[in-house]
Length: 301
Image (cartoon, rainbow, N blue to C red; front, side, top):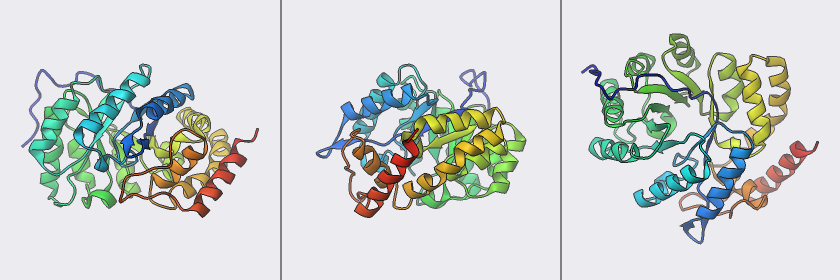
């Protein structure tokens, strides 16, 4: 059933352009390390990022209970210094998802990042119902997280364009792996496209995307901020000079399951403990050594 606009619908489309960091969740002896999380957010804010996305896959949200997720969100909101925060959410029970969206909307959020329902593999009509119900329940804008390799759900081009008709759905985090669909959404113009595949930042923005939600934004942050700004200004030659040296690092950060490699590098810098919740595991020693050496080379003046 088509969405029927209400007085609660967003009157203006928010701007999600820029470099958003898909935040890790630091742990210490099994518990969330809120001190390390707050310090990390403050450092990233000082490095010029646009905003923060806690409790996504990089944040190991599946290993956090609801109370922990709310506590993480509140720490990020407090430490962000007024920068916008988009909260990640996922699931497959629609009633629980809409209730969670209403609860999260009580916080001063810039938006919710919502994935398709995992495991149950609904039809495209079911996908539309899922996102419409959550967007109707939310009082903040919704970003569609298109990531079929995690959810098992492919959101086809026609469905994505149908979702663009909802007044509270403002953009996508694009991990769909279908550049033709990405181009179609960009050309349509109703949804802002942010890549969620770090190695696609240059290509997506050169095609007309507005930015990225990137786990790699934790490291070499100032360079990535500069890269996104240059791309937004269509200064492609200068952007390419920033981009090409970063390629080996971005590849290496995802050589083993995220966020293991990222946490290893942040732990080496003293920003958090190299600790994850099972079944996520620490990066291998060999990868950690290669990451540290490469990051050090990139950091030389």
